[in-house]
Length: 157
Image 1 (cartoon, rainbow, N blue to C red):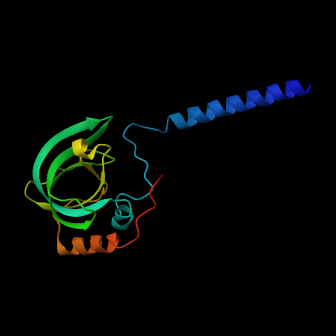
Image 2 (cartoon, rainbow, N blue to C red):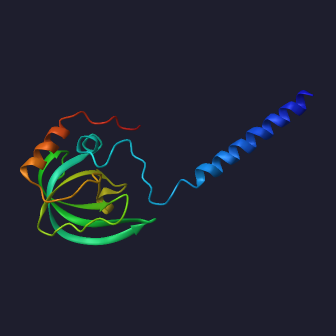
């Protein structure tokens, strides 16, 4: 009797687990990013950015599609650093969660909040901020200066 009850309980758990998996499976799509912050919020994004800097777009490098995720890659000349230690020219990948990003204008200076890619020497840095990218102005710079003064988010081990 106890053996039969155990078999029934195991069967119920197996069916419940399978149905739960099937329910969640349809909710995941390619190009879906899970973040612990709102990528459209300056203060939230700044807490997770290793580097925050202004930089001039030196060149558009390429547009690439990675698993349904479109991103543009640029060569950026670092102008001023609000957080981090980037210097010289760096490569930055800029993509949006939904749709393709608007092309940044060559020669214009923007504010970047980035995190290094797996291989920063080869792949550069990923732009974390998903809000409107427009040439930097004094007001925008002041907002980001205030945001980088906040403590950084705890790093995962």
